[in-house]
Image (tube, rainbow, N blue to C red; front, side, top):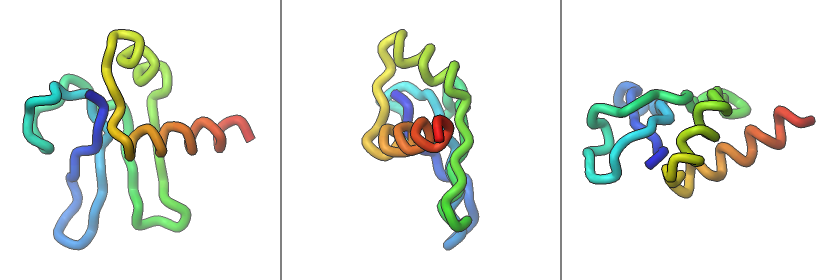
Length: 80
């Protein structure tokens, strides 16, 4: 699964976008870190390794709902 893992301090959220087994804890050991998401900047900052995300999706990884939205926004922003 490709989902967010929180790494920020209290009341200062910052997230890593990770590939992780679905049964593991939110902040458990990931298979690979494929990006970051910082919602505190205006606009929010998203950095993704698109080729790695595409690779994991081709291997059967599913994106969480939030990561799917971030991925589609990042795709639209990179094209524009």
